[in-house]
Amino acid sequence: MPEEGDLVVVTIQKVDKFSADVKLDEYPDVNGYIHISEVASGWVKFIRDYLREGQKTVCKVLQVDPKRRVVELSLKRVNEHQKRDKISQWKNDQKAEKLLEIVAQSLKKKPEQCMEEFGNELIERFGSLYEAFEEASSEGDEFLKGTRAKWRTVFIKIAQQNVASPFVKIGGKIEMYSLASDGIEKVKESLAAGRADSVQIQYAGAPRYLIKVRSREFKEAEEILKTSIQNIQDASKKLGVSFEFERESKEK
Image 1 (cartoon, helix red, strand yellow):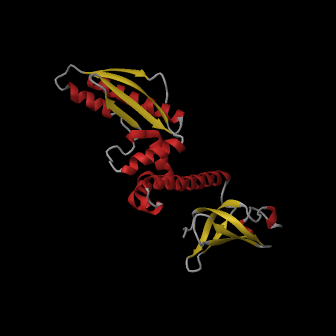
Image 2 (cartoon, helix red, strand yellow):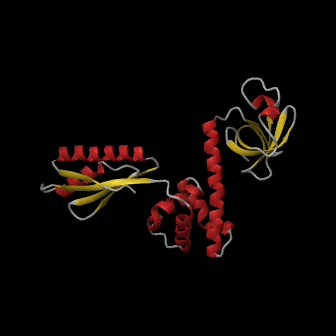
Image 3 (cartoon, helix red, strand yellow):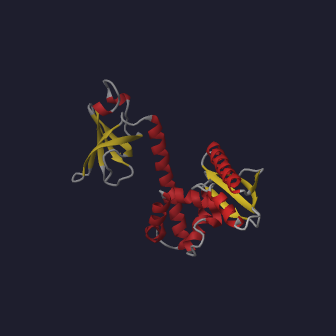
């Protein structure tokens, strides 16, 4: 059952004079209804001006009756931005289910078995199954590196064949060194100043390091990289570490 305040995708089943009966697409055997007062802001004379049988839309859950498996819904309390996001999420969830079926078929297992073995864990780790497929598509062999289970190879293959990576990757090369007796520690401390959740810094053979930033938006990635490099540069200056940065010429 959904909870009060949740946004749900529904299909209009029946439209009466003062309400509409709906089916909740994400919750099997759960029905709902929208009272005419929750259809649109202002006075609604004809509910059919807003709703029709077979229509798919997004509603907000107002009340839940778990015994009857019925929920009271509102259409007017969902704005266009929320509606677009929810429909997109729902479509992605639908696609993820289909992709998991392909993975299961390749592994000669049932989708339910795959969910128990690794699907639920992926949802917990990445937020949704579709986001796990996005991550696998983007990272390739780096996805859950160290996991030797057979499903990982199949999962990556299906993801890269069917899901476009939503991430922008930018970065560059850093050259850093210090002649001080504790120079290595000073370099490590300077690099630490630039680390963040979406920033990856790798050793590439002294005195070189690779810095990579990943984000869903190019502008955001640019800002993150700029901030990270500035923090490293400031720390290097303070600690007396030589620092140079060369931007990668090609964004991925």
